[in-house]
Structures are given as structure tokens and as C-alpha cells.
Length: 308
Image (cartoon, rainbow, N blue to C red; front, side, top):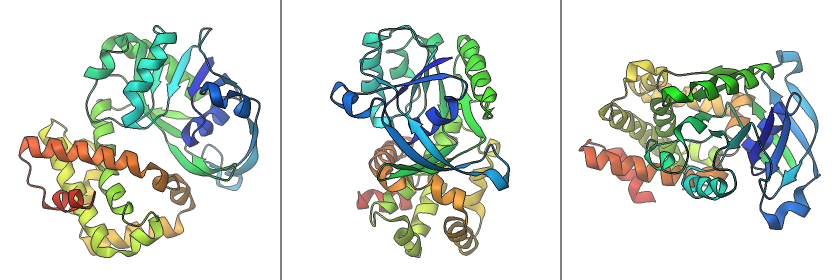
């Protein structure tokens, strides 16, 4: 397949490197960046979960191939941007490529009404990364999972979903296809947004974790957010992560702290968190406002809202 990836951020670069072995991958960049980035070679240090444990730690180099305009056909355009950048990005892209196929690779809270006003319904599907990381200077430091979430909202999106799923499978990445992709994205959103507000108080995940009181508020806020999802029609029993809100905090905190301190995959997956604070805060405000509209009792969300 011929794939266009929007930008050269962490997620876009991780998946470009993973998909480029069996596909032609190009990055779409701004005109003023083209000369600096096109043909640039960067080093990477990635935990590749497609490999066995002995061979997971991989190092190498990746070469960017870039364009600043869409003047040919692509089988798929992958859009891994922050949620608050999505609509303007899609509007700009559709001026050049109105009928191409898109994988919207970001979180969601507002549903698809605004997306449907920009893209033809049959021309997009939704998804979310199974990897993460950061740039340390020019070094891409992260992990890529052996799975990825993909889904469609409408029946006429299934052909695109199937072809995209095949593409990932051919590269050793097995798609998870939930029954309701929007509900999956909403649950994942509320699982990170409150922590993003907590993290904004320190700009360091390690320091944030040490603040037990703040972490407690964040986890309680997640539980309140799950109730907001439930009010929107989500069946919480379909999502195992919602059970965390039932675990006593002293146990949950110990598990949380141990995972971030000892699990190298989790350390890399969340390494981008500080860079994503603005996105998580923006997502939090949307979730909070929905909770107010639905009349959900959310004292801990109120506390976090005051910190923004």
C-alpha cells in the first residue's frame, strides 16, 4: 500500500518505521519543514512487542521521505494528531485530497458529526495507537505494540476497515476491533484525561506519582468519568479497565506506582505524557462539561477543574 502519514511526531514515526517494511510510506509536512526533514535519517531505540522477549529491544535508523502537498493517490492517509487539531487538519487535507481514505488515529469525545461534515463517511475509519514514546534529541525512544485498535462507525466503512486491518496484520500488528469504536475511544479518553490534569501540576510523571493525594483525586475522577460514559450509553461491563474504580486505592496506588517504576514498556508508552498535557487538559474540559450537562455528581472532577 501507498501510505501518507501526517507529520513526523512520535506516533507517526513509530508506525511509519513499522509499516515501511511492506508498504511505501511518505510523511506530509509543512512547506517550511520540507527541506529540513525530507531524507533525514534518525536513530531509534524501540521495544518492539511483535518480537519475542529476547529480541524486543531494537535499535536502528529510519529515513523520512516527505512531501508538502498531496498531488498523487494514496491508499491510506493516517492522521495521528492531537484531538484539538483534528478538524482543522482534516479541513486542510480535504482541500487537496477530498476522496482519499483516512485512518483517524486519535482520541474522541464529540462523536462523528463534525468529521462527517468534512469527510465522506465511507472514506474514513477510526483507530488508536498501541505504542508510544518520545524523542530524546533526535533519538526516537519508544515502544510499538503487537496490536492496534481499529473500528468503524458506519456499515459502509467496513471495506476500508478490512483492507486497513490486513495491512497491519501483514506487518505483525494484530487489530483489536471493538463492537463500538466510539465507546472504546471515550473509555480510553477518560482513562488518561484526569491524570493529564494531575501531571500538569508537576510536568514530571515521576514527581506526579509521588503526590499520593493528587493521584487519589485523579483515580476517583476517572471513576466519575466512567459514570459520564455510562450516561452516554456505554456498557461499562464491556471494558475491563473500568473495574479499577472498584479497587481500594491503597492497592491501586501500589499497582500503579510499581507499573510505572518497573515496567519498561509502560515507561516508554507513557514517555510522551508531558508533551501531551495540553491535549489531555483539552479532553478533560470536554468530559467535565459533558458531566455538568448530564448532571453527574463529580466532586473530584470539580477539584481537578480548579487546577486548570
